[in-house]
Length: 115
Image (cartoon, rainbow, N blue to C red; front, side, top):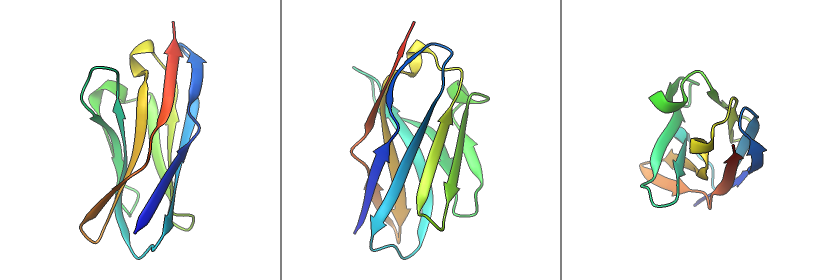
């Protein structure tokens, strides 16, 4: 069992920055992909960014050039640096990890961007 705990959310003005962190704990054997998803009110959960265990990132078009995903395998932690935030980035951000063909989710952290 892997537990994911997100932190770093909050309220920020448009154009500002936030850095989200997600620490994995529990029985860590070999975490493959890690990712960030988000869900805005009234919308479906959507993929924001993924990163492989070798550090290869992939981004949704809506956040390319503004967000950066990274991970520290020694700390079992994934990060999301969010710059130039827009009101449409307001959502609950969820951390995701997969290990041995099992998917794990965090509880989410709220990000609110005011105009």
